[in-house]
Amino acid sequence: MSGAIELPWQEERVILHSQRLLYSFKYWLGYSLLEVSGTPREIAAALFEAPFVLVSHGRESDPIFNYGNRRALELWELSWQEFTQMPSRKTAETMAQEERNRLLAETTAKGFVSNYSGVRISSTGKRFKIEDGIVWNVLNENNQQWGQAAVFFNCQFIE
Image 1: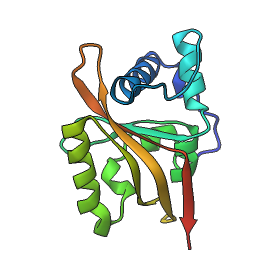
Image 2 (image 1 turned 60 degrees about the vertical axis):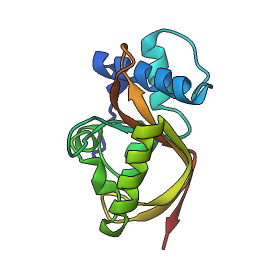
Image 3 (image 1 turned 30 degrees about the horizontal axis):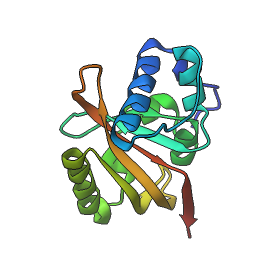
Image 4 (image 1 turned 180 degrees about the vertical axis):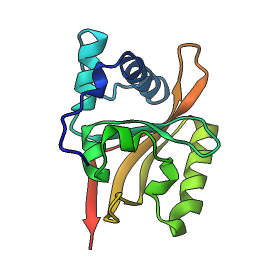
C-alpha cells in the first residue's frame, strides 16, 4: 500500500456510491449502517472513515471492487487504486471460492445475508476470519441492482 494519503470520498462518483451503499443497506435491513448527517460529501467521508470494514463490487461477470473504506484498504494492504482494480474473488482462497459463490448467489436471491463468517486473504497472503458479516445487494436510484456490498465489524488474523 502506498504511503500517500488518499481521499477517494471527495470524488463525485464515490460520493454517489456512498449514498447507494447506505440507502441499500437500510432498504434491505431496515436500519442504518451508520448514523450520520451532513452534506453528501461529509457523509461519504464518515463512511470512508467508519469503524468497520466496508467493501463493494460491481456486476461484472468477474466482479471488480468499486469501493473499500479505509479499514478495508488497511486490512487488504492495498491503495484505493489497487483495490478498485482487483476482482473480489481474489480475497478468498481457491478452496473457499465455492462457498463465496454460494453466498453471493444467496444474496442476489434474498437481497441480503447476515451473520456471515468466513476466511479471507490480504494482498500479501495474510489470512483472517470474518465474523458476523452482512452482505447485501446495492441498488441504484431506480432500485435496480448495482452490485453487492459487505460489512463486518470483527475479524481475527489466523496464524
